[in-house]
Length: 277
Image (cartoon, rainbow, N blue to C red; front, side):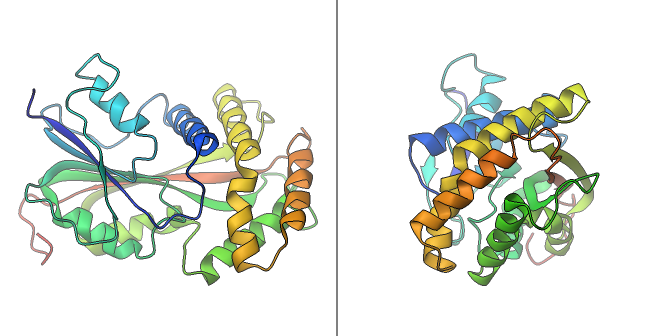
């Protein structure tokens, strides 16, 4: 077996279900993100000789497997292994990584600054970390999404309820600052539009919107049932009505809903001066 190793580390504090339907939705999210990034699995300049890569919160493992397949043309490459652990506990790795990848961990992480510090601590000098996550604030470029729409009402309640529960639902907004605070340098930040539906004229955005529509349509109950009934005082029937109204709305081509995907990556200095080196 080659010594190259692709690790994964999974968080356990997660408000969404862990079933077959959610697994399918996560794979849809992966495809949506890949299309948004121009067909790439990541944007950070990972060196070709990188030997140790960590995928934080691997989900279905699809990113790790596809990244490993770049070198090994097999279903589960021999350089990929999975580890179930709590990502917010102290990490026990004794060898640093060349690259750490963390994607779509909103609503799973309580202490984002600490996660960034742990990533910094466990990267080799000169290595890279990359965070890809959402700003879930629904908006529209033309004002077609208004406060009275079910989707907008749901979005406001969702964000407030998450934050009241100590969970940040829009970590994409803060990734760049957290990376700077942890000590990373050469930080690059990009923002991508995620349309809800196929309303954009741009071919790529239309495809991204189709994947986004699919994952939202498939996942509405997953997003809402546990959170709204346990934390916001809604009944199951009330949540089902909300989901039905949103599904009806997002089929309307005149409603141009969207939110943003943020990609931020940075490098650990070759000669770190931080206490986390």
